[in-house]
Amino acid sequence: MDVPEEVGLQRQAAADRLVAALAASTDPVLAYQANLLAGLPPQSPEATSRRSQIANSPMARALLRVFEQDAKTRHHTYRKWQGPHWTLTCLAMIDYPPADQALRPLVSQVHDWMFSKHFLESPLTENYPGQADRVRHCASMDGNAIWYSVRLGLEEDRTRELVDRLIGWQWPDGGWNCDKRPEATHSSFQESLIPARGLWAYGTAHDYAPALEAAQRVADLVLPRRLLWHSSDNSLIVPDWCGKPGPERIHYPIQFFDVLFALQVMADLGRLGDPRCADALALLESKRLPDGGFPLEAPTTTTAAKVASRGSYADWGPSGLRTSNPLVSLAALDVLQRAADRPSQR
Image 1 (cartoon, rainbow, N blue to C red):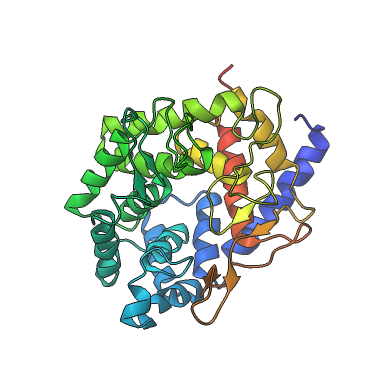
Image 2 (image 1 turned 120 degrees about the vertical axis):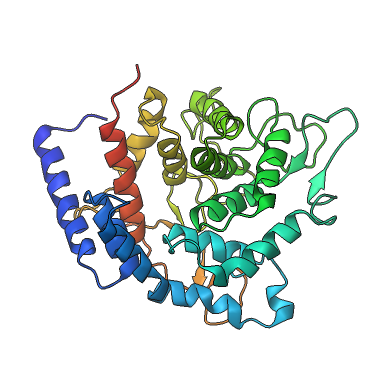
């Protein structure tokens, strides 16, 4: 969507002011991400120093309360959203510094779970006779585990096995699905974007072509639908278990399938220059607020001091349609900046 030059300049000026303010924040998470967005080279000594400070940030300390759980509670690896699996996902989201061996037991617990008999059998993994090419499995679990193992610098020898197994389970159309109905023949976008991100991270880190190719197959699956819309009638794609609001709203911090996350994955895969991203980019741009930021429209966690259903020990910031959320703002501005840096591939 084209905007008048004056409006564009005003929006950019507001965004620049917001990023500058967040770059000066006393919160190490916000300061690190904002400085990267402002141009700080991620491999520079200053960036490394800033990232190291995240380990002592309020968000990191809150998330690490997973270690305060008793053994029985922490045994539930996938507990939403305070178990080891989601703790590691959230630590990777806030750029927790890599190679912290204190996290190694959590990573090993996740790998043990993913190679257990329970994980590979019904109801977590379903195989039907004559449908060997459509293993029913929630591949987002494996995708996140691969992603944070790479991002946190805590890979195991078994991480490559996770990668190859996930590639082997990829459906003919390029994604994955956990729909147990035998008649299901198409991949789920909600179960495919996270694996694409994880495989791309692994493939990039190790120059592993099969992982890179598998990730790009997901882009080729979602781009003909312009990321969010059915190609048949242009209606929004709303997975049965997504609920309301749908993917047109920004969901955070737990992300599966929405306008922001779909564009973040396309950014990682280098596909934002594809003209089929234009409508999703315009939708994201339409959410920009007067201060240059973006709202958290559909919070997916509730801040909780103890273990609670869909709780998080961390405070992820304000929500509401007219209130900027710092972390969402930085993520959205990063996507839009990367889109502006890539010429259209018409």
